[in-house]
Structure formats: structure tokens, C-alpha cells
Length: 464
Image (cartoon, rainbow, N blue to C red; front, side, top):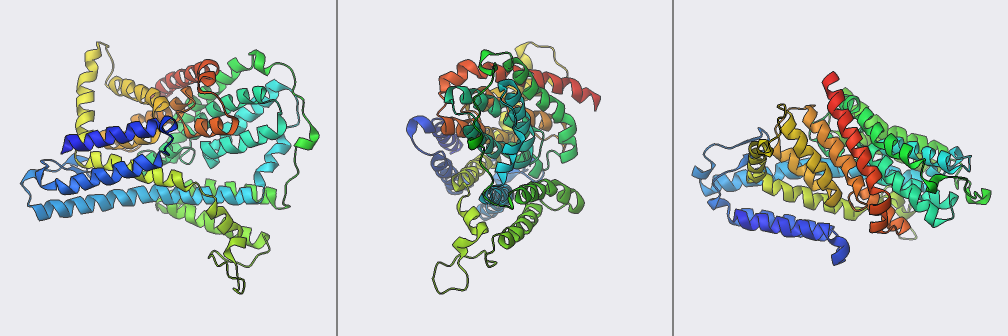
């Protein structure tokens, strides 16, 4: 039965990786894979000889000797435990996505356009690089990419020039998301999973992530694509559609940034702070929109309020629900493998066999090779299941350097292929960037940045 579950997971994983070829959204194989894996566990629970205790990160003693009722009860408790942990991540993401959509409702991101007052290609490259790096740390790398590529489309009319900027924005956004607990889904998973803390994440990863962005941008600034000036038309710099644009931008970003502070002060899960931030931002949104305060939805003409006129309801309707369902499917599918002890066993065999590479490494070196491979792997396949698997594979304590290295590798390694990160995929869709164009023009820059940042991490971790 274990082989059947692994086979279902592999087939589902391949379907996720090949979603562009199959023309099937990756959320579909993720949900099917999750449901079938847990169904097979339920049907074959009596025959399993081992079970993984996630709370204590160890295999349960004498699981094979338990009665069927006890095994079934344990499976239900484990399923509920993993659903709870997954729900923490999903509710957190829902809150963050809604705040971002509220900002967009008031055209808040148009405020950023006012920062760009030059026509020099090189200066614009650096402006967008730093905007992507720091903005992605606040509103996550996917949203930052969407915002900045949208602004690019207003400023640079020539698509052949614009795709160069889009390619570099992908690198900067992924680098910026790695050092912030709210900057990338995988980093958020590690943060909510109590593997890293905000302060240590910043201390360990800010310099490596910054170098991961700076080095490719420095090299790119000498390339022909960024020589000279662009033809910048003033009419393309639109004025904000709302007088509250700037207020809602700063209020929304401030709300998201306050979440790690709230967690530090209260020790409550991050989604609680995100719900508080959403509530505050939503209150101002309703007041500024001059609509009646309503989060409910009622389309009847005679009703006292009509929810679809509410900026909050409008923002909720624009949330990327396929992504939320994909995360649900993939995280719960990985949880199935973890519960059977498969990931724990794989990690143990990996650590035992790695020294056979013949390299004389210090005691952390084996993990370094594994994590670097994880970073390269995240460029080929989705980094979410890779990090989800690592949570079940390794038992190092909170803020161990291994978790920070995983956060860096999974976050920045995806830049090496345009399909390797959510930021890359969305930029690919917005600008119709060709896979092989990116592989030829941008991938090597991303690889150089990734390796420089990894080397910087290996050096700086010895200082802390």
C-alpha cells in the first residue's frame, strides 16, 4: 500500500510540473493526489507497521501492535493536526491577499509610479530592482512582480526592452522574499511551522539575499539591453484613481508588516495578527469608499446594504483561490507521506549515503549539499512541496542554520528557470516571455546570484 501511495504522489507531482504541457491547472492533480493518498491510508491503516508523530518528530513505538480502532483514531487525530497547520498558512495567505487587493481597489500601487522620474535604462533597472527586493519582503514576491510588471507596462512601451526588466524583477522579487517571513510562501511555511523566527531570518539571510539580487543586477547593468534611455511618455504615468491611494498603500503595507511584531508580542499564530490587520484596513476601506459598512453579500435591490459595492467584498472576490486550493492539496498530500514515516526514512538514508560522494565535509556539510540540490530542484519543480517535505524530513530545532539555508535556497533557486517560481510564472503570463529566451538570457544571471548568495550564507553563518 505504501508503494501505491508513493506512486500516486509521483504521478500527481509530475502532473503539477507539466501543467503547461497538459493544459490542466496544477490545483486539480494536487487535490486529487491529496484525497487518494489519504483514502489509501484509511483503507490500509491496519496493515501499516509504522506511524510518524509530527508533534515529537519521531516514529511511534509499537504502532504495528495497536488495535484497528486505535490506529484509526490516531490517523484521524493526525489528519486533523495537519489540516490545522495547513489552515494556519491558508488563512494567513487569505488575509494578506485581501489586504493587497484592497490596496489595489484604491489604486494604491500607482503611488509607486511617482518614484520613477528618469529615462535612463540603467537607473530604471536599479529602481525596479530595489523596489522588487523590498516590496516583495512586505507583500510577497508574487504580488510584487504583478505590481511592478504592471507599472513597467505603463512606462516602457517596447516589449522587447520590457521583458529584460521583467526577467531581472523575477530575480529581485525572489531574493527579497527569502529574508522576510511574509515574503514567500515557503518562508511563511517555515515561520508558521516554528522553524525560523523573524529576527534570525533577517540576520542570517538579508546579506545573502541582497547579494543574490545585487550581483545579477550589477552584471546586467553592463549588458547592451540596459544602455541608453527609454522613450518615456508623461501620459503613460497615470494619476491615482482615488485620493486615498497613498493612505491605503501605506496603511495596507503597515498592516502586513505589523504581523510579525504582533506575533512576537502575543506569541499567537501569525494568522491572528493578519486577521487583525485585515480588520483595521477593511474598516478604513469601508469608510473611505463612502459605502455602508458591510462584509456580507446581498444583491437584492431592496436590501439595506449591497455587499458587492463594498471594497472588501470586491477584494475578496478577486483573491487567487486556485492557489489557495493548490496549497491545500500539496501540503496535505505531503503530510500523508510524512505520517507514514516515508519522508523521515528518506531523510535518514539521504544523510547516511551523502558522505559516499567522497567529499570531506564538516558535520553540517552533508546538509549543505542536500539544501543546494533542493534550491536547484525548486527551479525545475514547485518549491512548496519541496519545503513541505523538508519540514517532515529534518528534526533540527528552531532557528537552526539548516532552516535558514532551506529558506534561502527554496526562495531564490526558483529564479534559475522562469517556471521555477510563482513570480516567474506570472511574469511569463503577463509578458508572454518565452521559456528558452529566459533560459538563454536571464537564467545564468540568476544562477550566479544564487551561488554568490549561498557562498555568502555559508560564510556569514559562522559569525552568528
